[in-house]
Image 1: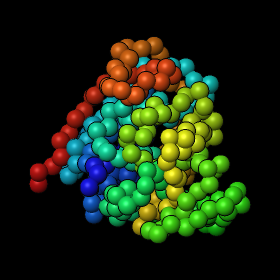
Image 2 (image 1 turned 135 degrees about the horizontal axis):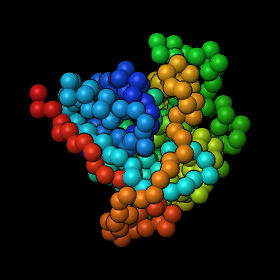
Image 3 (image 1 turned 120 degrees about the horizontal axis):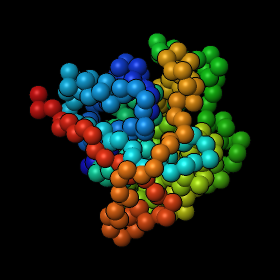
Image 4 (image 1 turned 180 degrees about the vertical axis):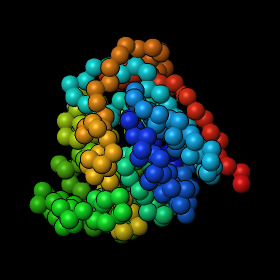
Length: 285
């Protein structure tokens, strides 16, 4: 079965990590991921220490690596594409599972992801989100939101066995928090193109560029693959900065990331670096 690297960008989220909202959902997976890679982007609080303390107190069955983003370049707007790209580069799994830090995954998510990628032709899979508050109650303003309705309005779509909807190419954009893709395919396009930052402060053309490499694009619809998203609820209650990820400032204090082989991160726009600040092996308990 393919190996899974869970990658998470984060900044100024110590209180959120202290709640173990995401970490506990990973601990509770019926089929554990093979690693967790957290890219910390110029945080102004003790986010890395909070993550480390949690894992030392309650060891995980998967290794955890924390990266410190060192060399972002100036962007036209706040964006999580920089820490994303660092995590994409550092990940060692066959599958990249991108997860925002305010997500809780259902227990069967990793198992179903492996099965889907074993069954499907080359694909990128986006998880449908359920917006909730900290008590996991569905937010009233999002209770009626169904991405399937939006997709149907934008073009033809087809159901796929296993609780997936195949999306038309013109709506294959990166709209959000949870997606899975083969690492090999993500590296073909070099991850996020930071010149395309737009909707949701990230690369709005990521899905389209993945599709041009020959991937099909799907949206999950089953409860077992629907992620719980705290979203703006947490920002309003616990974070002064409502944007959560601000401009990354500063000059490079580390080397550019080296080319790792043919077609590996060869994009001229990828001008950032990171260093490994914490490496916790999986628990043997």
